[in-house]
Length: 326
Image (cartoon, rainbow, N blue to C red; front, side, top):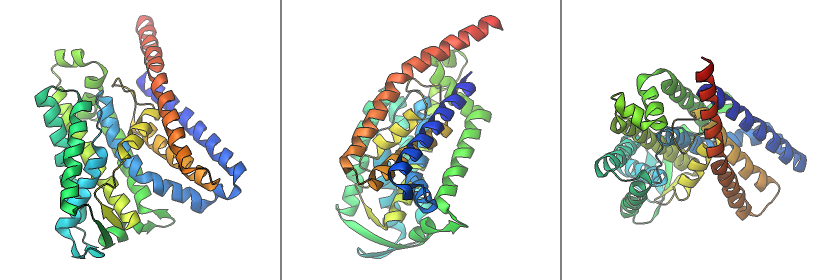
C-alpha cells in the first residue's frame, strides 16, 4: 500500500507541475523554451539532491535544520584546504569534492550521535548544531567572500550532450537512493523504524543505526548541494546556506513524505524541488515581486502539512481493510 500511495502522490505532483508550467507559458510563451526548462532543472539540482538526503531523515520521523549550515561548512572547509590563490582568485582542485563529502558526512554523523546520546528531539539538536556549523564556517572565512575558478566551477558547468552534469547527478543519486530504500535491508530499516518504532524495537531493529545512516547520508547530500551552488555562482561565503533548510524540507513534504515517518520516497522529493524551482522561475518570468515566492512557498508547505495527517489516516484505513480481506 505504501508503494501505491507514493505512486499516486508523485502522479498528482507531476500533474500539478504540468499545470504550473502551462500557466506560466500562457503568461509568458518563452517560459516553455528548452533553454529555460534546462535552467530550471539546473536551479533545482542543489535543493533536489539535499531533498533526497532529507527524505531519509524525515522517513525516520526526524528533521534536520542544519542542512544549510552543513552545506556552508563543508564547502568552506574543502575550499580552504584544497585550493590556492588569493581571495579574488581562488583556484580549486578536484580534491575539493572528497574533502567536502567527508566534512558533510562527519557533520551528519555528529547530529545523529547527539540525538541518540542525548535522547533529545532532532529539531532541538539540529537547531543548536546549525549555529555551531555556521559559526565555524564564519570563523574560517572571517565572514568574507572568495571568488572561485578551477576544477569545481569547470565540473559544475560540464555538459553531457545537451544535459548539464549536475542534472545527471541528481538523476543517478535519486535512482540509487530509491533502490536502496526499496531493496536493501538498511533501506527497509529506515522505513520500519520511522513507520512503527515500537514494533521495530520489538523486532530488534536499531533506531540509532537508522539515524546514523539517514543523517550521514543527508550530510553527504548537503555537501554535494553546497559544491553545486558554489560552482554555479563561482563564489563562496559562509552564509550561502541561509534559508536552504526551509526550501529542502518544503520540497520533501510537498513530495509526499510524511512528517510522521515511514511513508514517502525520493521521487516525490525531487519533484517537489523541481516544482519550487519552476514556480520561482515562472514568477521571475512574469516580473512578479521577489517576495511573492516566499508567500507561495510558505502556502504550499502549510497545505502539504495540513494534508499529511489526512493522508496518513487514509493509508492506515486502507491497510486495515486490506488486512481484513487478506
